[in-house]
Length: 224
Ligand code: SF4
Image (cartoon, rainbow, N blue to C red; front, side):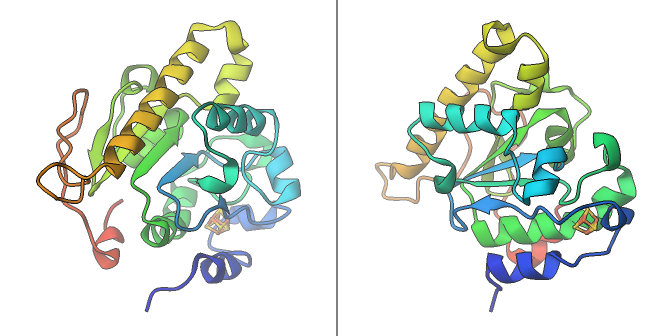
């Protein structure tokens, strides 16, 4: 029988699999609906997240919450997590061995939440999840098939705030991407006329990666 997300988070709270355990205030596992259709993956906790124990609570988190509200969702309707669960010192980029150590927590999270749509926030999460070297500017705006789910990459809210803010071209793109997220969720929830699940296949325009079969939990451990 699979574990609950709360049980996994409790175990992760004492994780010492990588060096970040030495400098963190606490493990930031994730927050939201453990059975959400929509799951967000950012990069790693920052200063405020490390202090409060919740992902996306600073200014970037407030922008994410506003973007969710724009498509009729609350934070508690979705699940929000990161590639890494502990803050890298000085917010430096995650190192490869840290990612490798933390990946099982992310895989188990996805296996339990079973989201229909995964949104990768920023370059780092997008390159990691979709195993690509392409940057976020060229990846965003499309839906990618990924192990029976759909991935929609978009800008990290912090990049918007550090860039031109809400008057920037990137913010307009972010708004377009949230409209795409909403449309994709709505389409996925609508049964096709042949009575199927509505989730099979990924034939929509803009799919940039070949559709992949849905995987069971054990197989998902091989995802990365
Ligand atoms: S970053 Fe991940 S693997 Fe490293 S100590 Fe934190 S929870 Fe464990």
